[in-house]
Length: 409
Figure (cartoon, rainbow, N blue to C red):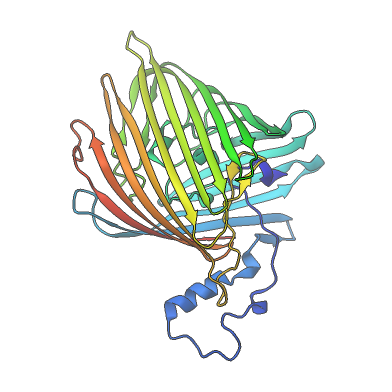
């Protein structure tokens, strides 16, 4: 129940020890490729798959590690970098009367952030009720888990979506309709962003079953009252996690921000190994002191093809996509799952007296899912347009090649 509506809690059943699946077929000579041998041993860590049981305190422990290596063009983005993008560990435990306790901490670009910390229960009247610090239900990419995104980073339009906040939500589904709504206050830092004020956020999705696979349609709305003389900031990394923290899109702190309304539209379709996904987001920022309101917007669209025939898993419980599971895991005998994808995104944070930047990116991606635990990915990101008056990157077209090793348990 707890994982059914969580946007990042995926628990797999425990598997048998690694000794049951040899790294190489019997009688085969030892491999002379140390890198492949190391990768094979990592993918065969079956005792960790599905989490770690702690019988003394009765906790389930899960986590993941993402290590990135990136090479940038010579147009202002820097040199080759190797770093830990994210390192996560989370705990869950069943409490009194079937309440689930969940706590999640994450190292993000070497900064510790406390993510989801809540209690949750499935009720007959209000569906799944969650109380605590959690992701606000807004956006298909934003509401889903980082571990399951097709590309290494969410699109730049995520700058317009709300992040994590302390509040209470209700999530449920009836037939093809799936909804989630909640009331929120401030929250902890999430990828460097932090919410303020009071908010009402909701998401309504419709899932249409067809002979050619499911269609997903959804609308999102969020209104947040910041209060007089407050500040609001919209920013986004350029779909590459730079340790330097250089953001092309950044409004910086906007003074006299009184309130913000956010709107979103989602669409997606999965047809066997083929899928596509698109989102549009807009934010309307109200300012006091007689200052005019501001409007920002962004969108992305992408297509994906599983070369090995797998299909993206659609979760009807919370209207997001789950992890890709290979038909034949790569363990010395199978080939795993291979995916190709392409994304086009555009976000505009220029309006009135605010020059937050306008960016259009093209991203090509490839994912190799060795099994449920290990994933190797690479993205080539190219800026087709950068319009930030007064910025050092204005008018340039930088590119980046990023690779990632992801391991989860």
